[in-house]
Length: 318
Image 1 (cartoon, rainbow, N blue to C red):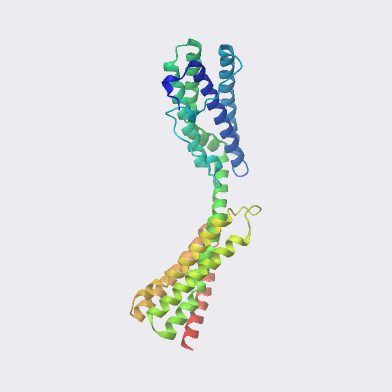
Image 2: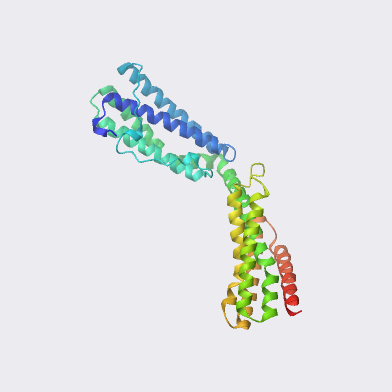
């Protein structure tokens, strides 16, 4: 790697050209990745890319006038002092906020390079261009705020918030809610059947643990293979499967853990209380994210849970 202070004027310009070319391609990748769900942000990023293209053109013109057509290959990773970039643009899951933060960091880094290069450059024309670009990049460094203001004024930000909310519901809330409901309701029968059949907390705990873990694995696999998310927009199968499986296990373990208490009556009373809390939480989630009236959601969930609960008690006492 070369030290920054050892760069010649020719290499300073060549590196600036490489920086602008790379950043422009990254911007284009960000815009392409966000286009489907966040078109307004994608358009704003492309406008920024056009400005970067203008910087590149000015650098190329000055370079050619000074040093000719051949541009030596020198990249940011060839020079000491640059922070190693993680390839965020290759991430499968890419959020608007991640893109805005990354672009702001990119602009700040480029600004710093131009300022430092201009301060060390003896050629007046090169120094002037670098100072001009540093000033323009400094304005770009407030990109995140600029994008937010522009999108808010156009009303596009509100639309993007709706899109983000919809994707969150599809990719996280729905599989998580399905798992929580299944884990909370379907495990009631085996747990309470074992509890009332044996009147032994340890036996009930083992049955509940097995039912919760088994249901979690089953629901996780079922959700993961249900669809690949390409057409439905429900996100990556692996993530949905993990969310659904974990929430299923959590739903069952909630009323299983009280049976770690050796006193059967105390454990059962606490387990029943936790079941009621779980059902209310499920009803609230359905109201909050699925636009289901709370009373309607509570009635559906509680009636279903009560029927399964009674079935478990009846079978356990048979």
